[in-house]
Each structure stands twice: as structure tokens, then as C-alpha cells.
Length: 369
Image (cartoon, rainbow, N blue to C red):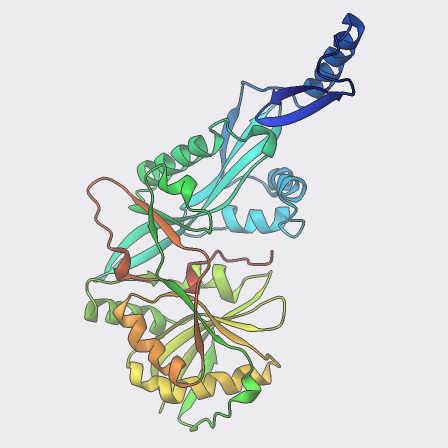
């Protein structure tokens, strides 16, 4: 049997002629084979000219084409133009956006970034989260991802003064090859069935919905008390964007008060299954968790949720270790988070990943998809 392998943009197609290998293939058969090869090349043409563009403040209509790319190529119809527009054009940090690769006016690859702020010893540090990497399989091996990443890194670090870029991904090899450091210490805390645990709120804690200046003050206070740690920082605009005014999901800031004194906050998110994710929780005194957690769980039960998950956190970080002790003592189970974090810094910026107070609030604002 004669087998011809035709390479077209790193996809391989096999054309078989049903004849023994020792039989001479007549000229007519070779012409037929050549015609089949030409048809394959017409369906999957080799492309050499690839255009790269950056989008962030574009009109909503432009993001519809990008959404179509994610739907057709990535199988994600929930990632609509409205979601992408909200994510990139409405981002109040003025950091981030998305680079696309196009060939013949067709989007063939994309890599996005979400801007956010860390605070270390009361100094604000700009950072960016990589997300939404997708390349059409026809163009694998064309160095599209390294090119997109290089453009993103330059744009973020030079134009936006970002100190480091990070991403959460189970597939870390493409990133480590181009200089990212892999960090595997992320974990998840899960309470599988609320009804199995009976918590009696003490009545000492009251809750309020919505972001307030108390939250920002608390973050600054804790940052001073833990000067080597990197905490995720929110102001009013960011809080509205990721949570309180988010039109796509239920995600809210909750403030905790003990005797009318502000003692901490949490960010909760209701997922597609109706379960609750605690995307962030921070207390001025971690020992207050033993009265705050029953209050929080009692509130979640009223939302008819059956499962609670502390989405992800850095289990190496001492501040988070102290905080999560109370979750473990209350019946939560600790599980490994399937997506390690990868980080890349600008030259001369030293980032100890153990010092990152990573929580679920590192996630983008939508999670509608």
C-alpha cells in the first residue's frame, strides 16, 4: 500500500492507494493523488502573513468577532461579545486587554490579560493575569503563542508598568519554556454538604452587602502587619467591576461587624450549579473566624446552596495557613488545585511566590462562562 503524508500547517493527512507496495503506480494514479493533495491544501492553506492587534477600549461590536472565534474554535458559546467587552473595555485598572493573531482577516489566535493590583507593605504593585489563550489547531507550530506572549509582556510591562504577569493553567510547559516559573502550592478547601455540619451562629456577627472604605483600610492594615506578603488590593471601582455591579454573575462583597465594629470581609460567588465559592476572606483578627464562619455558613444555607468552596489559595503562605485552620477544624477538606500558577517578572523585580496571598479573587470578573 502506498501511503503519502502531506503536512499542512502541522496537521497530517494520509492518502491511501489500495495497491500492494510492489505494484507500480501508473501516472494517472499519481495525478489523482496530486489532485487530492491540492484539495487538502486549498482547505488548509499554509499562511505566512499573520497580523497581530491589541484591543481593550474597542466598541462592543468588535468583540463579537472575538467571541465567535472562541465559540467556533474553542467550543465556548457562553463567552459572548458582551462578556469580553465588559472584561477588557470596562476594566477600571486601565491595565490589560487582548492580543489577537489574524490571517486573511480571520482570527486564528488570542491571548488576553486582566489587570489587577497587589499591595505589599502599603505599596501598590501593578500586575496582570494571563487568560483565554487559544490558537486554531491549523496554526499550531507557527510560533503564534510565543509571539502573542511576547507582545503581551512588552505591552504590560513597558506601557502599563506591570511588575509581573501570572497565569493559572494545568498546561505549564509552554510557559516554562519561555521563562515562566511554575508554582504548585495552590489548594482548594471544600465543604461538600452543608447539611452534615450544624453550626450555631453566636449572634455576635452582623453582615452588610457591598464594598466600603473599611475594606480598603483593613487591607492596608494587614499589609503593614505582614510586610513581606503580597495582598490583592481593591478600591471602589474595582470592587464594583468584579463583584457588586457585575451583570453576569452573583458575586458580592460581604462586610462583617462585631458590636458595630468592622472586623473583616469576604467575597462570595454563586456558580452555575448553585454552589457558593468564597473567592476571598480577610479578617483583622483571624481568631474571629470561629464566630464569622458559622454566620457565613448560616447565610449561605439561606441561599439554598449545598456546597461551599474556598476557590483557591496559596497553601504555603503563613497568613493564609493561619486563616484556613478554622476551615479545616470546621469540616472543610483540603484538596490540591489542578492548575499551578506560572509567573514572570520584569528584570530586577524579585517575587517570592510563597509571599503571594492568592485567593479566588485573582479570577477575572465574569466567570459567566
